[in-house]
Image 1 (cartoon, rainbow, N blue to C red):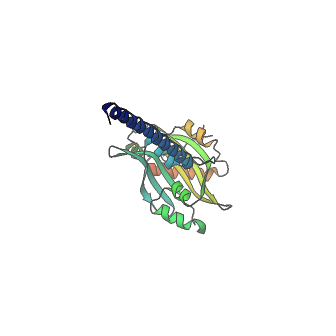
Image 2: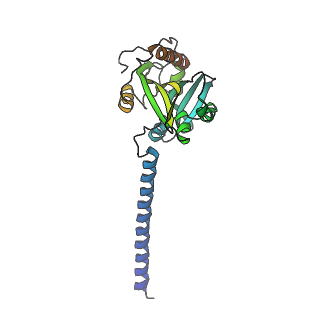
Image 3: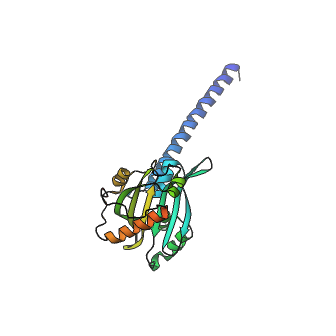
Length: 230
């Protein structure tokens, strides 16, 4: 083989490699697109809070701060450079008795599992009945976890969480979630979840929010004002 042939072969090899690289890149992009479509699902399912945090900040973790048979307080965080930043401070109130079909999932949640992720992994559809959107000034405890100044305005969301599968639906818990200002604001909550209505049981919602504010470290744990909640 002469020098010209060797050069031609080298150019051809380089061209082939570039073409293969382009094909591999295109295939990887297609796989990523399919994975993204699968993760969101072809249905109108809303992203779980855990999925939304991971998508926004690159990762997600949960730290259970307190737990007993009726309530759980959790720090839903993202992590960067070895430091955790609370993105959602969540307070969960369970019913007095857990429906038997939910017993296995509830046990996994009590042991530290993320509620929506646990139910989704077991084939349940997670549904939220939105009760109220409101704002609070960050108490010292939440401000520390979120790395913001005490008193920073934070959006909060009170809702009922139900799960459904095989034609059956169960109420699982009542929740209040308080969000980092770089994550979700009150207008974001309305846009994502739609209108809120607590008229079915205002007293229960007031009590739930009072419990959540106390867990958040608010010195005055009075229920949040109703104005602008819907």
